[in-house]
Image (cartoon, rainbow, N blue to C red; front, side):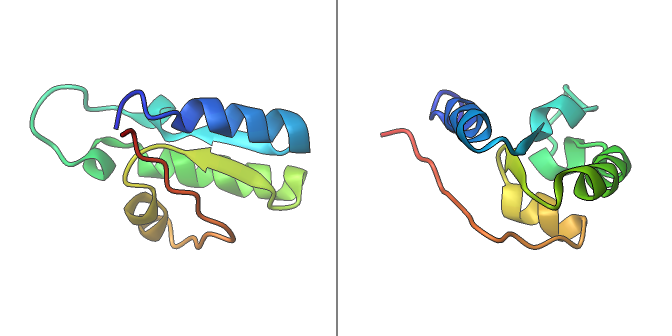
Length: 88
């Protein structure tokens, strides 16, 4: 999943459309061990950020990271649009 272009594409979308951006990698708190990616995240910190951003950006937020569907499900959030990027 590293190097597939997720962050690059997200930054291009944010720049062109003026949306807010959240990189889930910024919320990784467990860097060592064999943990599943969503288990490594500060879910409470992400939740607080999304609550704050929704009021400021009218819910137009570009979120990028791996295991995104599972991460957002843990936050009880749904996606309006999903773009899957795979390195080939």
